[in-house]
Length: 497
Image (cartoon, rainbow, N blue to C red; front, top):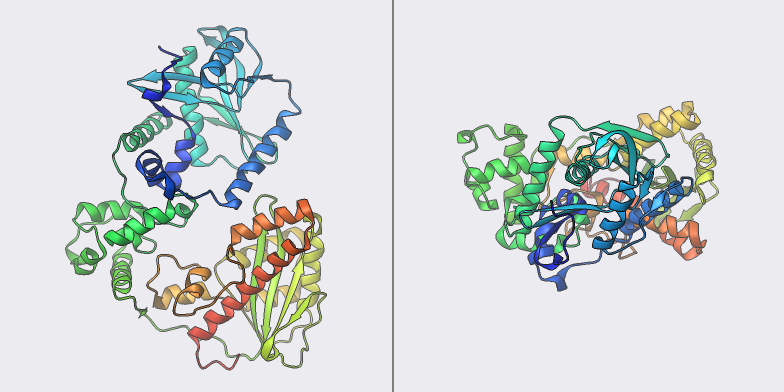
């Protein structure tokens, strides 16, 4: 076993970060090795904030422990320092570095903690098991692979494979996990797959919401567009795409021309899914909207509310409720602390938690406001977030009869769209649809997104800069007005405008 090597530049180095990159966008790994580095973009501010929160959480947790910290930054020195601590039987090693080399690849891990356990290893009557500290409430698949990688390395490093691993979550709870018999082979297979990519085996395209987090997303999208790859088809599972490619269906035109009834069973794709995918391919080629069913009759009640909630997954809170109200020209229901009056008798009502501790007060102010609403109204929103979070907030802080009425009037426009309309788009978020040439809605801020709003809120908490708070509120207002814009596009004869 060669634990260290001075000549790293000639060898591939496999680290746990590759699991995240590969899961986000397999091409991320390939482009890092072979792509034009000048086209690589910066990671989003929201993703950087997630990383920063994870580091702060780790530092906070470690501050309450007695640890032996490996101070060395360079891998070779860090490995030597870790090995010395393990030989000496240190109880808890922080930021240790373990590695081995096999067939020209260095497998390197820097577990947050290496915990001494009773047992047997090359060091004596003890061995070490990896513990990760994560800003997450549960052990995600990438974390399982990370822990399995560390165990694989530790087997070579200490002569014993630890199967009892664990994670400290965002609440400082210890989540224990035993690596099952199939875990190690699965991780080894994934490692081999990623190494093949690092050696030049270019993966198929994956154009997914998750892949937007890759700094190579725009490069991959442009290449997929140039090749008219079937990965451009909305919501086709990667396993379905692989099976279709094996049948010679690799481009949008291939999909349009395919005899679907002659295909074998395509995994994770029903006949209805494939029919819809075929129409999606045609829509993309023709750049035209296709109607695939009757639009649900949407309420023509005069009073219409367009509703959106902003939440912070880092703090596990909701911090802003926004409602665009139309059909109340006399402003009978403009009875909240925060109201912005808009054109044509419309107005924007919002409820804000300026700090996390105010979430409950925000919720109660919202409950108080909906008491003033009449019997007849309708609430439009986009996607399931609002419905799910109204339910969870009611469970946490209490509900009301008025809330039950409000919940009964929710209409999810995403379901309306996906049931009846195919857009020539790669994604169907409210922003993708509203910004398209069919609706032409524009958000005021160039960086506007849900993740950016979270980043702004975290900045607001740190700086108390009112301009940042204004960006957050403007973004939410634009979201609800985009929802109204979609409703009007779906119902051009609506009298709500």
